Image (cartoon, rainbow, N blue to C red; front, side, top):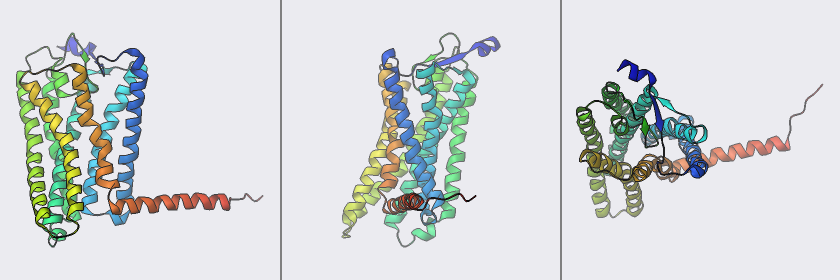
Length: 323
């Protein structure tokens, strides 16, 4: 086992059926996705951190979601882009580290979605008690707990897979190192690892999802019974949130369950589904949760006006150098 671990290199194939002449166009699309994620999530983080008017519980939760999404894209997209451009490879420890971070950040996303649903429940269903229950301190502690708990399950998968290094075949037909991809390379029996990680995955997915669905069902029932003229706007907002949550959860549940029961699909289909639930929410989250929000739009617009105004004044009154 020692000799095997010394010579191992892991190769990310990306899209297995992709022809070489399409490497550059596909990698450019990934680069655009990465830049868009940096711009969208980076803007949200900057606004929430720098603007005191956004130091509210809801925006603190959204900022944590943006941090998790931005980190995920940073540890995955540059690697596969480098593969298509330079033929870059990874060592097995690097692959394990990426696997840990991928599952860690995905788990954090799930818990933060649950916090957002709880926040919306109290904001809509218990508006008079919202300020006393959901405070900045409570949200800050809750977010920290989410980050810490998420690391436990990801660390478990890391330790278990580190005990089953691959030998012989070392190509991963995917864009990133995941638990399913890494266990497929192992030489020893990994049935225990598969069952353990599957149970953890289902708990991570269904526990937050049960809270989310329950809270939104209650919210929608209350809004439908309400005579308030704003219920249609709130209903639309909750619906768009549920669309993003569905894109985040449904493909994951399907993928993990299909793999557990031995149902396999074309490798390119698997990679496409992986892209669907990994990167689409990261681009759409800032739009749905933030850029459609009145407070953030006004803050962003005022900041942009100040920047433009400062540049205009610089042009009108250029600095002069005196001798």
